[in-house]
Image (cartoon, rainbow, N blue to C red; front, side, top):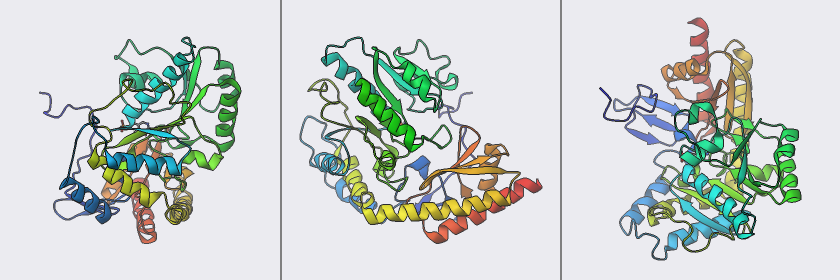
Length: 391
Ligand SMILES: *Cc1c(COP(=O)(O)O)cnc(C)c1O
């Protein structure tokens, strides 16, 4: 008999009653050190007192009005995002997938309004993940995601990861945009080297093709800059944000330049919940905290510390691990042992990680993780690796 919850997830036999910062606590009081943070969502940790206060204050005033009216919190969050990024304008969604949908629509509409109705194709990359809508799975194109769901939305061209020559050849008079994650998340923490991101920008400038960055997982301070593309010194035309931006409250956004957004006039897009007063109250507080130089410097410092410790872990367990990759607090442990076994051994050692593609274990802690918790995390991962070796 089918379970009452549609069985689309392979869930671990674990459930939690409450959270405190980097810790998740079961009903019986067992504490797990959380290096997954809801897959890069709980950027400021669980039950962050500041966010709890912001949420409950707003909850006592106003939850939802629809976008028929002005929403001051939405305006405030949009102003913060515009102030701190390349963007001139922002649309709010409830998820990363919805951000992908708008990014695709926006790029096509841009060319349509320019009279280039043939420019509909979006180039995307092997290993990409942009969400689970029919459009987002067509964009990613992996068999695992699309099989059985056809016919797929046309207009996506899938390219190998990191092959600049193939990319250059793929751009033609039908190309609307390039869509890419600066660091592939689900794909196994695969960073696009800064030089490649710069090359993409140059190629887009040469051809007029729009550059869409998916920073749903790697953005919002996770790399130690507010957004990952800042490391390469370039800016996109359109950017998708979600996950960390709500600190655990469902929220996403599409950021764009005035030029890229020029086709999106009144009536061309909308969302009932997107940008509601509750989500935006929390999002604005998250932005105030994360878009702060001192906070981001701490993420860089702690990212370097964690990475150094993880390199030591890899060296101590060459049969289990192969290497560390990523930046800041979006790190991947490339495994020799099956990554699912490493994640499972972590459960037994009361440390939570997330599997990714390419046999990687993702380490995506709260950006507020302490030095002591970093040390404890590596101690627990060491115990997990030892248990695997002796199994
Ligand atoms: C998670 C993710 C998405 C999809 O976000 P949802 O909120 O699950 O819809 C899109 N792109 C990237 C890079 C992601 O990591």
